[in-house]
Length: 80
Image 1: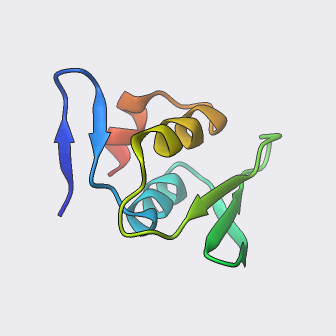
Image 2: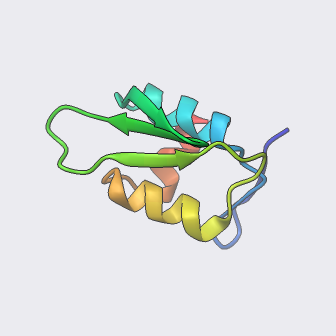
């Protein structure tokens, strides 16, 4: 279950699997896995995303991934 608190733009209770699916919808592709982290890349982007496959990602980790992907929190929420 995904629970989002929009009041302050916060993200909560999003798993690594759900995050990977959302980034996939934005054009990111899985290129491999290192331990418990899924590695995703996107043509035209310099950054690689390393997404922990945890049951729940911390808000800071998720925000850092969103920022590295060149997206806003609102863009990401629309992809969930």
